[in-house]
Image (cartoon, rainbow, N blue to C red):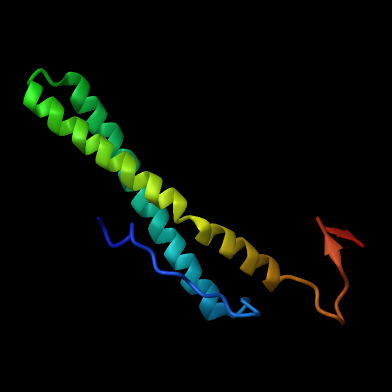
Length: 109
């Protein structure tokens, strides 16, 4: 299993709007999305190769590759909880403080 498929827990500080923490989280998410893009492209290419393959042994190998890609994609989708953490961090970063006006969707409250 790849290193990207085994994720460690990322802890978010009580005020996650710190630029360094936010940047680290964004970098992690970008990496996961790039890995998922690779898996999708590889799976689609292997399915096309499978459909055009006449050798039974090669078809079995290609089927196993596609199943492996699908399994890794499923794991990565479960690990995308980081996306929720990013959204929470972004919302916290722009949350109104006690002395700032409150706005929602660009309208004054």
